[in-house]
Length: 461
Ligand code: GLU
Image 1: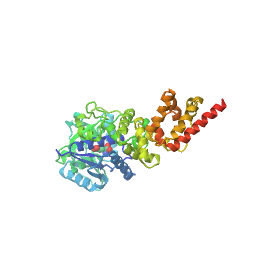
Image 2: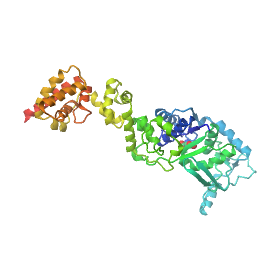
Image 3: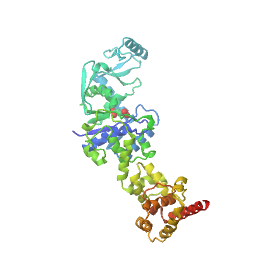
Image 4: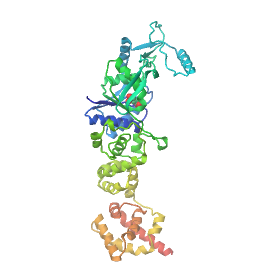
């Protein structure tokens, strides 16, 4: 079978992580099977800002690398096809006009509810031919009246529904506009969709939609209902992909890897490149119980990818956050920060240290490490560093090592005071790399300033 799948978001403002996961499952399925991935924007019910909202979805998908093979198609452009299909169903007797007024329907529902019954439409116009003129009507679809329907869901297995739970639902409103479940089926048929992979909140819709395929004389696609992502609570803030990218600094490789594992598994493997996902993804691995969102795990996965990426690539990604241009120096800074960063935000914050003209000594760190006894150490080290022909980590390291050997000192005894002197605080990546990347012009004056600070401390004693 030729695989043709679609992602069909309603443009409500942004690409939600849950929606991105649905898109990803479809995209992976298409890529795995050499199929076609179609994007359809379901914008018929959306009144405002739909263009902007759809653009946010497209932009989020492009960032994640889920390129589409067909589309985007906009449902708002497809009204003519929907009108034609409504007429087709009326002509074939699969749909009918219902003239019941709102008052009548309200009364009908109240009576059913009073009897403890579900307020389903009682099909009062299903078989009538005495149609009034110049009276508004809706168009309803003739659903099977009773019996059960079992669908073999690719994720959930066999799912059974009793038709008595569903009524003859409206396919066109009194203004002629088609309804949601109707246009989904018309589009899925028209776009020759082979597999409908979507959230399991659509399961009831599927049972409304299935008889519609038959009314059109078309085979059903394979349905795979994916459990919703649990735990994307408000407490975590907006679940938009863009927020996880911009505000929280996740990399696309991390987001893709994490989302793929939300409700899908392949043995106990946690880390997947996109290529590995394409090779491994299948619907059998999708779990029928919901995957729970876990920000700590997402951060752990992101950390992995942030470390695995090429430093020059990461430099490109953090440079705009820092308002600088990416260059070889930034790539070298990235490289020493990669083992100690979990997000780009975190990395950019640490990288700032290398771009400051001045530092401020952290008082606590200075008091602890810039002791009077350290003064003579600086007096010896500063000229040696000043005399260095090449300012690189190996040469810098050699100066410190020779110093420690001569004085029978542990490296930490001089590394920490130097770190405080050149960075202002007591935490940084490896000292020699840090000193190299801060540069001679930043380090020598800072060491001199620290030496002066020690002298002042001594004088005050
Ligand atoms: N537009 C629907 C949604 O955003 C998806 C419908 C479908 O996949 O069939 O939930």
